[in-house]
Length: 146
Image (cartoon, rainbow, N blue to C red; front, side, top):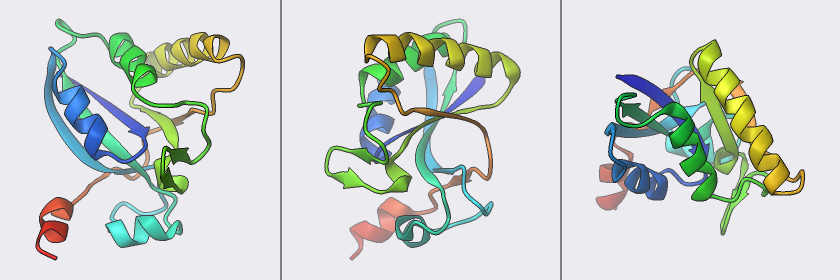
């Protein structure tokens, strides 16, 4: 199994969409790219942590490739809006690919370049090495109880 970590707006919708793809064996929502290795939803929303909302995907590369996952990533969100997806606005909603190794980095660079041509040079998707990933602990349950 391999891992992909992607930021493309609020994590709930993308988690559901990716979870329906053949070859995705596990999904998890969390935060990545921030200043600390642990954070809360409230801290992320404040903008001070620099984390993005992300979907962490575990996948079987025999059934779905990292390249196919990234192609789908560009199909299901708008990579041309800076720090926003629809009505969700803030740095935590940015478009970003977090790579785990050099192979993922090279594939992501290629896919970003292809999509940048498709979107006439307007792609704002960042490419970063994974940094300070943390699971969104009990977020959903906590807010359902309110």
